[in-house]
Amino acid sequence: MINLSSFGQRWLPEIEAYMRWTVSSERQELRGLYGMLRYHLGWEDQQGRPDSAPAGKRVRPLVVLMACQAAGGDSQNAIPAAAAVELLHNFSLIHDDIEDRSPTRRHRTTLWHWVGEAQAINAGDTMFALARLALLGLRETGVAPERILDAQRLFDLTCLHLTEGQYLDIGFETRTDVTLPEYQTMIAGKTAALLAASAQLGAIAAGADDAIAGHYWRFGHELGLSFQVQDDILGIWGDEAQTGKSAASDILTRKKTLPVLYALEQAGPYAQALYAYYTADRELTPVDLSMILELLDRLGAREHAEMVARGHAQAALAALAQTDGEPEGMALLVELAGKLVGRRA
Image 1 (tube, rainbow, N blue to C red):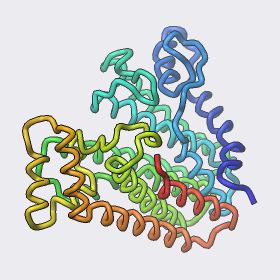
Image 2 (image 1 turned 90 degrees about the vertical axis):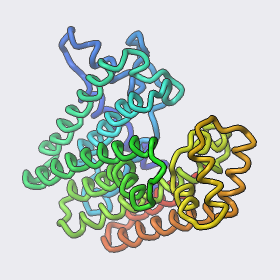
Image 3 (image 1 turned 45 degrees about the vertical axis):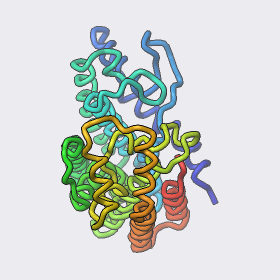
Image 4 (image 1 turned 60 degrees about the horizontal axis):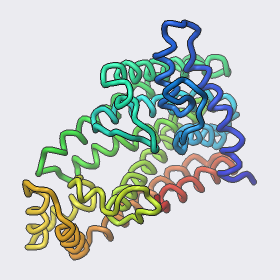
């Protein structure tokens, strides 16, 4: 039986080829615009020369194809949808980097840091439009017109949820009263929405009915929530050698992640002391960091977050079980879920 690694080796080149075909233009005056997109995607350097920079894990497009297979379809028919979700993901990254003022991504200068905010916004908008056009390629793979309309509606709603989640996340930076339900809403949009759509788009491309496609959406949604909570855990307790981020980076930036919000909502002196650190108008010192880690430990923050991550992972697998899908495709999705939730980086 095929595994996750061999599935990726089989299909990633075809997804990449469709993306490259989508992100192209014969118009000489627009070479710079499309060159910005190819730079962000890791295909070219700043001089327009071919490059092979790290391009991310490409998890979402693979979910599209695996879900299509699990729902009884031919993964080949879902390639336009797989390319579309990866382009949409990268549109969001271009804009996120501007909003977060991030100078680097995947060890390269971010697009906005190279070309400036205005042109990076143009590039992101172009990537969004190309993502929508890529999805319409489902017409050439035999997907019924009414199902393509369903896919387009899902795609646009997903983009709306992405931007809503980003809006909330940015707003949290200046607030000291963020609640766990608000956090859940934020990650449902910012992280889970696109993974949920990826799974559902694969089912739609396979011709699954609304009920079955809905189960695939739930699988991706719950898996996305679990993935984000695990990311929150790694942002505080992860191994720097594996994550690539400085130890406890989320604490140093006072990011309001699930472990922190859970701890702040507890009663008693430990939670009060933690609140004082998170509202102090000064930079945190190494001593502060050590004290915050101790407070989080005493408040059971890590244990709670791990329990929440497991709960969402179990809910994802329960939703997948409702589909009664093709065994090999199902096994691939189960393997992926285990890899995402159990990761250390």
